[in-house]
Length: 107
Ligand SMILES: [Zn+2]
Image (cartoon, rainbow, N blue to C red; front, side):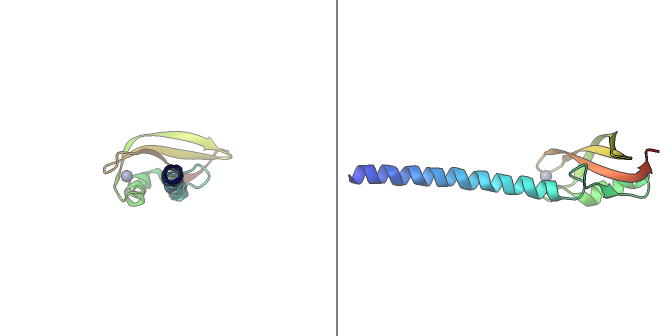
């Protein structure tokens, strides 16, 4: 009986560890996607394309590292043209897209 209890306890602890790790990862992902520019629906507004470099430097990664641009492309979202910068963090090396709205309308 005691062995069964110990096994049950060990199993519960293992499950709790997995659950808390999963919760932590989800929280980080949620936090990362709430940063400005992380999603096409929440772009960083810049007055002109020349300001993108400065805005990217100010934006930072979720870990606090600086982002380095790997390249840019345009993406059409609703009636706007967004600039999407592929960026890599210099600390955690996570690749991420940062969306910028240069207020250029499609029409
Ligand atoms: Zn990072």
